[in-house]
Amino acid sequence: VMVSSIEDVNEKIKALNLGASDYIAKSYKESEIVALLGSQIRTVKFIRSIREKEKCFRSLADNSPHIVYMAECQIFNGQPDISSFKIQYVNKNEVLGYTLEEIIHSDFYKTIHKQDIARVKEHWHTVFQGEDGIIEYRMLSKRDVWEWVQSRVILLERNEERIIILVTVMVITAQKKLEILERDHHHVLRDGARGLARHLGRHPRPIPQGGV
Image (tube, rainbow, N blue to C red; front, side, top):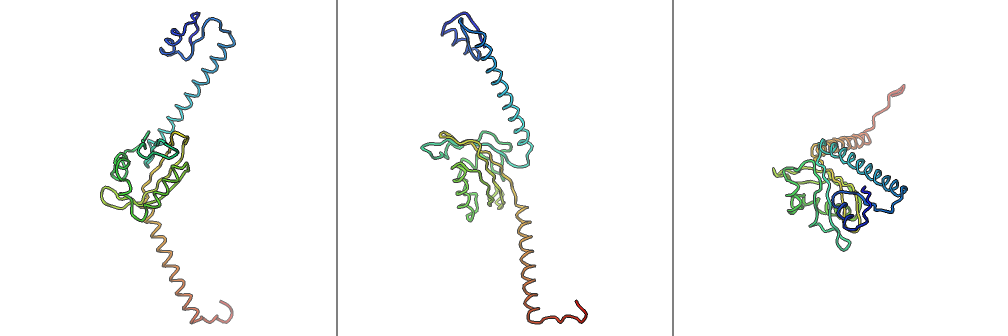
């Protein structure tokens, strides 16, 4: 904060351009300076708090085994402009062999399994309308192998000008294979139990004398 006896607009502009947060001239009161300094102290504390939170976020994201990125999309006439989609932060610049730039600036849906495309489009439509979302879908890797991917989106900000989202992307192929094995095992047990029930229904076992 610069305090001066010179009450000149040009001097004030010069001081602000040189880095002063504020400029008080001549007929100032002590209470005004105290209030202004208090405001500046609160601003500095707020900025430090934001920087600490950013540092904590980056530390967590940088050490995450998954892909984490923050993106911004401009809004025009009330609708998101997908062409303005821009990555602000990313901890890993590769998804299944693709860079994020390759995915964003090419036809993303060409890498999605045809049975999942409609769901993925609906998912992103919901996100751009201002809602969080999570979806699992199949994506073709650069090695021409279908992989299961989970995408979790958290809305950070949405106003009339832009939308900012935080996205976590996980490759869950191994998990999905295990789910399929468990489901198939359950179906085998179910079918076996039904067959046994039908057999016992046709050929009931006598109950031994004296109890089971």
